[in-house]
Image (cartoon, rainbow, N blue to C red; front, side, top):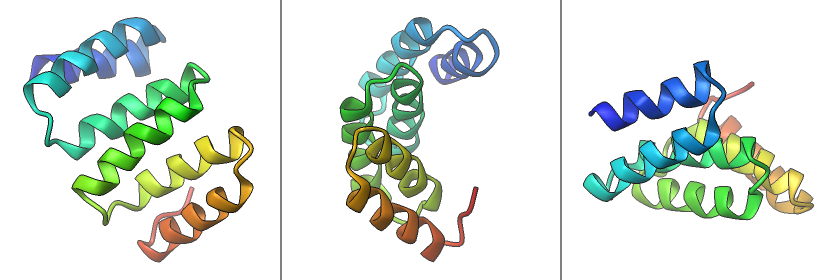
Length: 102
């Protein structure tokens, strides 16, 4: 899907979070059951400092596909940055249980 690729380019290469969000939002409208899209969008939200919104997207990603360690790790980072250290620790442990480490 072109919106996903454009989102990745704007996020990872061009460092343009607003354009990345626009493309990921379009992709989510087309594929609302795609856990990976919420993960990607959550990563952009972390980059923008919108930790609570990122946590909500990571929650959706986990709800759709709960066995992705990297999602738990990134949600842990968002929780840590928002001051939820206990939740962050739980997420880091969950990430590790899925053999994900940074």
